[in-house]
Image (cartoon, rainbow, N blue to C red; front, side, top):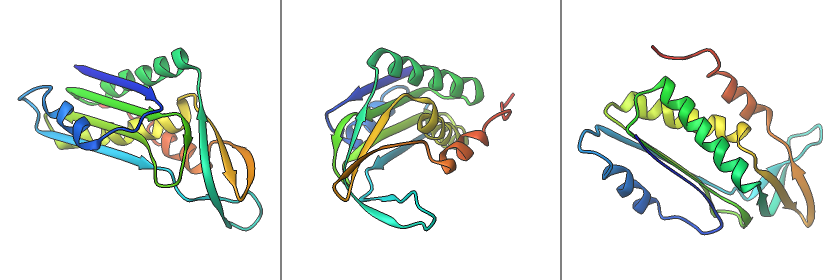
Length: 163
């Protein structure tokens, strides 16, 4: 099993990360990748779901703790699905709308394992990895909390181990 984890300020190239996953083994039957982008809006916290203009998003983390938690999330995915390799890259620092923020890639012998493991990794990463996000929304900086939808997405995996 090949694991690559990186928390970095630099951008990544999806094609390069895909090739890295393909080269892990000739036994691969599927490579699933996900690349997340910084949106240009943040949903307001008022009663109405208004979209506020996001100028930038700044991510902070504790390096050793964050990498360890990412590796634990990957290990949990390995208990559930048969994977041959996993890549998780998460950017930190100041990011602008449409910047790439996260890459998750999974290689497996079967597509179902690759799809499910990739979805699980993203869902768990959103709530279990230690990243603090500060948004500049319409010129006002505010710390962001985990969204209820992210918590619900991760909760669906609880108790769903595969044998």
